[in-house]
Amino acid sequence: MSKVHILDHPLVKHKLSYLRDKETPSKEFRALINEITQLLAYEVTRELPLKEVEVETPLQKTICHRIDSPDLAIIPILRAGLGMVDGFLGLLPTAKIGHLGMYRNEETLEPVAYYAKLPKGIEDMQVIVVDPMLATGGSASAALTYLKKQGAKHIKLAAIIAAPVGIETVQTAHPDVEIYVAQQDEKLNEYGYIIPGLGDAGDRIFGTNE
Ligand code: PRP
Ligand code: URA
Image (cartoon, rainbow, N blue to C red; front, side, top):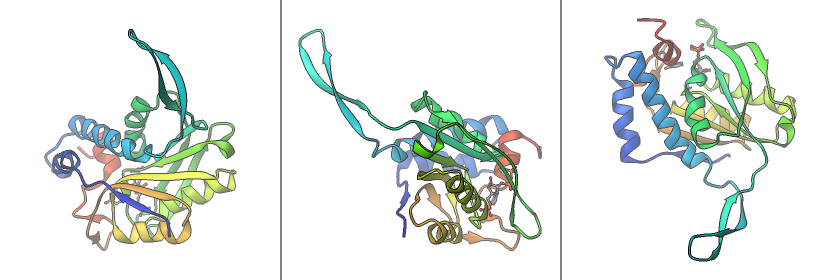
């Protein structure tokens, strides 16, 4: 089974309380997604390899460390994953961005893929798939399967809120992929929404339901 990292931090809990609030408007919702993503990114990047470099401070030479990683690719699952791109790019400004278009069929809850554009050389990159919601896990699982078919070997998944069943689905299908979530929620309702959740993340990020 892959490891699941669940953030346990007062800043994350504080921000999630505003993110979940149905009165929070799109502009603030986007800002909160961005801030929580930065806190998630801090954890997702914890094991990036470092190399030693010699630096001269105003006082003397010293050995410091810089990231020595293969190229990084951030892959948002459209639409809602787009909301998490800036949070990662702020910390990893040289990362490449790929896009996977996917939506859930509202009746079957099965993911439907409609677009894909990946950076060249994905095989050797450290890939980070981002989507705020991990509900049934169908979309994330399909995204990971697609990326592996394209040759990706080193993949992590970052979500803001996850249902237990979503985590289990991804772990079973992709035991090699580490999962990072800001919070694990209770369950799914009969329509496949995360409870208590935050509603439809894509609609709230893009204001399409206001
Ligand atoms: C949401 C969310 C995930 C998916 C999660 O996207 O952003 O991609 O649902 O559900 P799952 O784990 O059951 O697959 P949605 O299909 O609403 O599309 P959108 O981002 O375009 O709104
Ligand atoms: N997608 C969302 O945007 N919200 C949920 O609760 C489940 C899937």
